[in-house]
Amino acid sequence: MHPSAEAIALAPALAIGLALAYRSTLLSRPRLAAGVLGVGLVFAAFSTGLQPLATHTFLWAHLLQNVVLAEWAPLLLVLAIPSELADRAAGFPLFRPLVALPLWLAAYYTWHLPWIYDAALRHPHSLLHVEHLTYLAVGVCVWWPVVHGKSSAGAKAAYLFAAFVLASPLGLLLALIPRAIYPFYVHAPRTWGPGPLADQQIAGVTMAAEEAAVFFGAFAAYLLRFLADEQASGQIRPSGTTPAARARPAGLRAAPGSARSRH
Image (tube, rainbow, N blue to C red; front, side, top):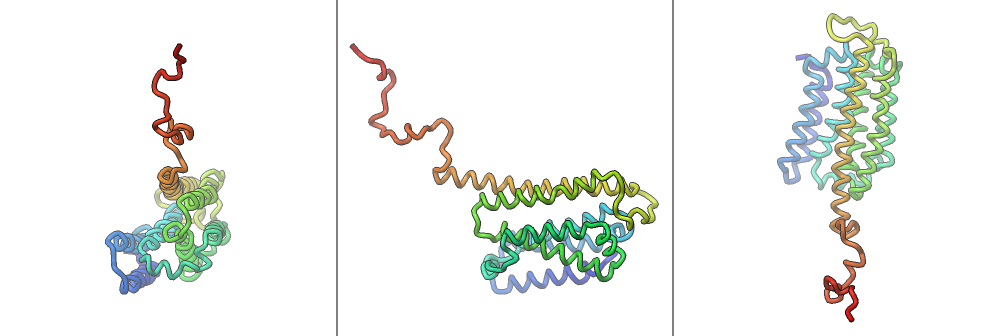
């Protein structure tokens, strides 16, 4: 094992927080499973062999940790929050969609600026922990309106599509830039694996594909729910049914051949 502060302090703190949240409410198996998986992901990302690869050698490993903290674990942790507790936090300003999404995007893009990214890696016992806590916090904020928000399925679909469109360029940019832009990983000692540029390209492609799977997948799910809700409420009519046919009483519908005049 290669434990870090995130594994030996953050993951247990998250587990304790969820245990306290469950103390006064009826616990459901799906919520418990989401909580266990969310905490487990944080622990695994910072206690296995991924940790030394991320902090010493490969950009793709560090970006994988970032994805766990900024997207996967927050979603699972938000899903694990009991509805009763979520209702109490409904008015929290950072959980509003027009605040949460810009905050998440700002954190994501800021921490990936080369000079800030390198500074965090060169201060692994201080600034790097701040980076990781920031990702987790804004990740919870960005997923909260989706899981516990009171907006319609259509509004949530639009929100998720915006997140997908606005976050995807970061991974694509890393994949398409023709040179390695993070000096820390350019000068990192490598005894195996891809070189600095290929490492960056792998990281960028992986990030873009992951965001497409997570955010576009969630967007598609809510879009389908929105269409189903609209059809159920009569806003979307089945194909082949015209308003006139629906409005015409059954007794007044013309029988076959009645349109032909009889002499």
